[in-house]
Image (cartoon, rainbow, N blue to C red; front, side, top):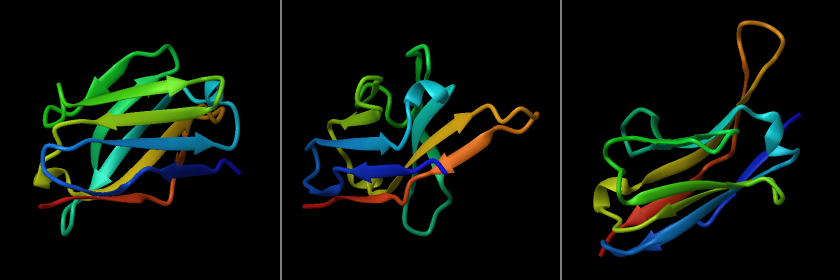
Amino acid sequence: QVQLVESGGGLVQPGGSLRLSCAASESILNFYVMGWYRQPPGKQRELVAVITSGGSPNYADSVKGRFTISRDNAKNTVNLQMNSLEPEDTAVYYCNSKKASGTTVPSIYWGQGTQVTVSS
């Protein structure tokens, strides 16, 4: 069973930065896409950023220019550098990965989540 473990969350003031990391229990080259989602208080989970196995990133409009997703294939980690944080970025952030299952439905995995709170 694939395990994804997030780290790096915490409390930060508006305008500050945090770096989230997601460590996978197997080679991340097995996943055709990995990414970060978040769930703000009282709202639905939403996409933040994803990155393909080829290294192509995609971002939600709300974080473009502020967040950067990257992957380290040697360390089996996916990272999210978050700059210029705003109170609206407060949420539980989840790591996500997808890999082919041999059927039309991919296998999807989630981490346990890490809390990010942006407040003065």
